[in-house]
Figure 1 (cartoon, rainbow, N blue to C red):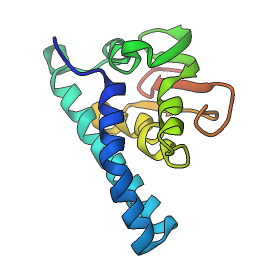
Figure 2 (cartoon, rainbow, N blue to C red):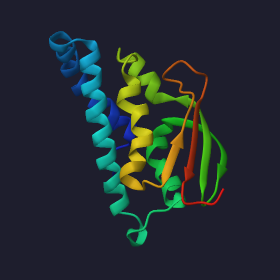
Figure 3 (cartoon, one colour):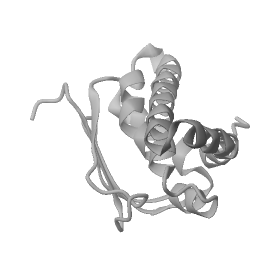
Figure 4 (cartoon, one colour):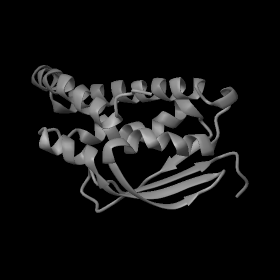
Length: 158
């Protein structure tokens, strides 16, 4: 396919965002700069979700196709995952190593890495398939030992 691995894209984006973010902090303060970055990244994630949805087989998204998308985010060893459950209705896993978090920390961006990557995860679903919901209570980026990803299809019967 020749597509650039997502972790490489995130590094390139971070290299561009860092000086812009620093200027926003200088002009607006850290709280306002983080709010702007958060809003922009969330909107971009929703748009990216819509792009992936448009490529879904037959134009119909599913949890199985969503699970397959994780190959993009795992490429080049970016994520080490322990998959707990992968069905037509749920995708539960723990990330035990996150090279995204490592990369942002190495770049001096650990304090906003969650805004540039972690915050994408749940809102991506809004663009891809709003019935897919994410619950996550731990992230490596915030200092936890693992990231707990619990995706479910809200259309599924409990």
